Image (tube, rainbow, N blue to C red; front, side, top):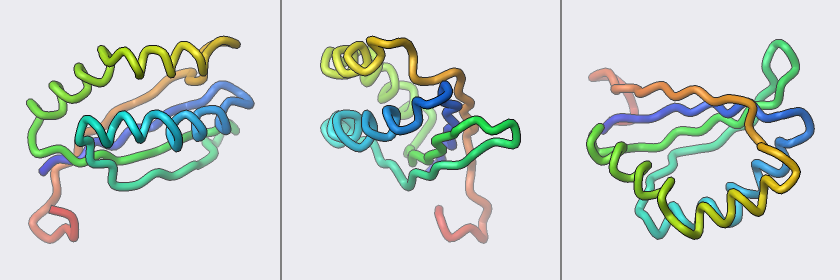
Length: 108
């Protein structure tokens, strides 16, 4: 199992919209596609930016690549994203880190 840690830096004032998009349609699409989210957190960076941080579990790098490609091509996701960004993008940037558990990690 590998874990993908994603950090989304929101445009000012857009964190609530990002959370609503995840809690509603995004997680529904992910359930349909068998994504395995582990957890979601909000944070504030040192420069005051709002962040959404989450972790998704994958069986392999190949599964991760295939699932993200399927998600990004999904017509429902494209419509949800377009509708949520009528006033401009919600995210300023994001980073992704792939994590492999150690032998003593509670998550394997």
